[in-house]
Length: 362
Ligand code: V47
Ligand code: SF4
Image (cartoon, rainbow, N blue to C red; front, side, top):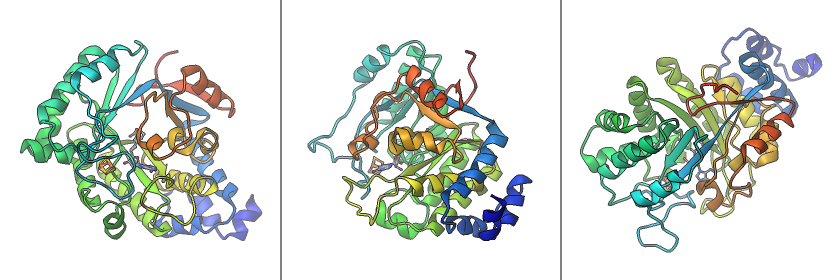
């Protein structure tokens, strides 16, 4: 390894990683240009082991998408529909109640996201949270991305902080990290022109953090962005985290192009995704967890990612629509036994967590 580090002139970066010194954007870009992915895996795994050893967390969770009707119509999105369009769906509170009532008592996280629906009133979201809080008091309610929060602010006439305070009162614990995509305005304008800007996404997360609401964060990569855009995105997350410490986990999302209107030259799945996960671990030295999201990565790549910097394997998921409508070939659900087997199969130690990443007793 020493020889390889020398060959690619990255002994200084290696030293920094060993001594917990932050790498710069320029150094991160230099890492992208290393052709040997195992070097990146080695460096990211050093960092992962420093933080978490061989511990790998998982959560018994359930995803619920309340609607795919969305006013935004992002160009990359295969999930969303216009109102009344073939394939559109809208869950009533009764539909949601039925889903939640069927859940086992062991459930520890409910992940709820949906499209920005033109007609649902603000009360629908508040009542949804109250209902779920009542039915599963033991579960973390991780609901609504920054994009949805901006939409709720618009339909309710409330400021973003006021929206979040109302949702928190109704039961919201945490926010998922979706909607970040890529912050660069030129790229964002091409893939999701109607969506809030990257700047606004970061502002809303900052407001959430200031109210004590922890959040996750994501990056959608492998479409029309360059390495420089990815590093710029990670840098912006790192800067906000320095200010707020509100991000719990970063989820790198490789773009699944099969059914999307955005056409890409080559799929990012495989080594390229692993390299990005590794560089994310090395850049985001202030975000505790990196999620290997098996839904988008596929099971085998998700296992490999656990040696490229990721320390969380997400969860049972049960009902995922965003990735599967886009052509993900991963299963819809994993059982607790399967999650444990997948992690142990990598020679790692499975640890159950709740939605906020608190470790649960065996
Ligand atoms: O924002 C949409 C992405 C995100 C595609 O916070 C796509 O714990 C790949 O954010 N190919 C939603 N990705 C999912 C998400 C998420 C998932 C799991 C856990 C958490 C968490 C967050 O999915 C969207 C977008 O970036 N996405 N379409 C696609 N074709
Ligand atoms: Fe709507 Fe989200 Fe799809 Fe964009 S990515 S169209 S905001 S559901």
